[in-house]
Length: 260
Image 1: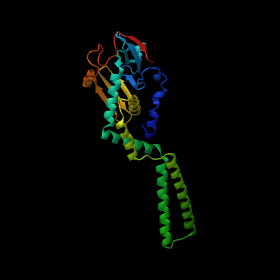
Image 2 (image 1 turned 180 degrees about the horizontal axis):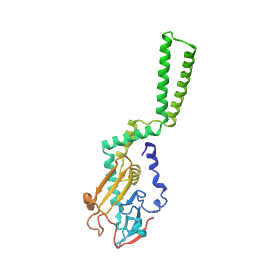
Image 3 (image 1 turned 120 degrees about the vertical axis):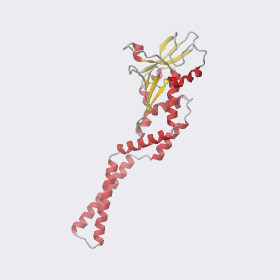
Image 4 (image 1 turned 30 degrees about the horizontal axis):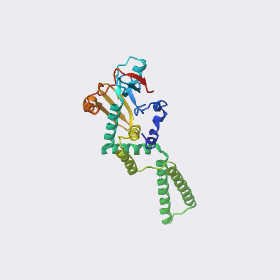
């Protein structure tokens, strides 16, 4: 993840043509994969006997029966809440933000190979000019010395122009600004769908979902987190105990319809 590509990730899911066909956006579209067969998990909805509409994700291979896969569907809001919560905790961790900023700074340096080269050449030219000036002060002045000095002055001027152009075309973003920009995500209101989408699109690379755990990978080095569902069973209380639905799996005995 380069700093410039972060903004592009905010619009990435717009390329998924079926995403906005659903009445309710599925925020993990293009990022949620089956841990067993590797296929996408697609959004679906269905109506229960009581008339309530439920939304969930289902393995596309299991849905289309393209290959044998036993992955159970999972409730949309439950898995999205889990991913948003884990991502928000990651953003709130100072050491993680420092690691991301460090990675972005390194990538920024790697992205512009010309500027360090021009700056090194400029230092060498300036040193050579100073050596000639020192020699002139000591009374050493020849025709070739003067010619060499003029060549170095021209080289210096050319390099200064090249460096200025590089900085204009590829402005260097400071460590402080990157940190400030990332800290802004700490203020997102995750109860708002647009803020949840921004958080997921910016930081989440992929989620590999199993029936008992998920592997969450973020857009930075070593940004992988495994979450076992035994550790989050208290999420069942969030949906109440009066429902005939399992706390994380999709509705049963309902009339289903594909959302996309």
